[in-house]
Image 1: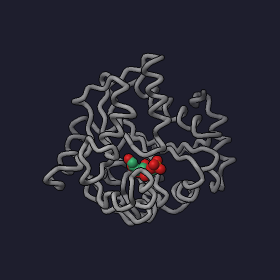
Image 2: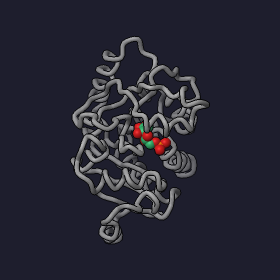
Image 3: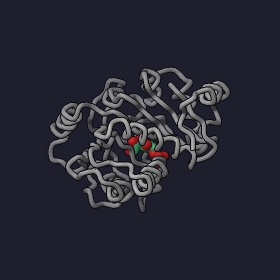
Length: 260
Ligand code: F6R
């Protein structure tokens, strides 16, 4: 696992966007795995800037989102469909038929989940999956004790995730209890993973994921099993990493490392 520590959120977002842009420059028809939440907003803004100012082309890109709340239609302001459209898709040139987001309103969840997995395979698999991390160490909505081999499925959110995400809703009771999420096994099949984390509320989860044991209690620790995973954090999220000097030494010595 590569760990890149950046001074702040803006720099973290730029470095992550640069990795995505480099992939698109070498593989214009790449399949991208997308995440929602507040952390990747800066990364999406930077990709939009690269599209508008530096002609970064998304016309052959296919996307798969990690997750969606069960019960929220696509036009609900807190649905991940809405989020993606608002913050990213409407600003770039990805063809609508290349965009895949789990359905929060299907009448048959098991069949939908099976279809979603099949669709990822049919598209050649995910080249690069963007991830955030929950304060409970989740990736996607793979809450503590999720199998590290899990596939796309319905998942009950943990109390901590409901508390964390209540900030986006009017009332805590409005936060959906269930989500449809790619599994940890699905995520690990992506050819490259980048996880972004910012702020002191993520410091514990980052330390556990990067330097703790691989455990289903912190599903982000499964990134340790992946051959090409990059964790990009700001100073605050890096605060509890014990090997920070080593990560910085490696990054400084890397000739082609993305920098701004
Ligand atoms: C969202 C997702 C979640 C978030 C995580 C962090 O698609 O998969 O795992 O990445 O809950 O969310 P923020 O960035 O809002 O702290």
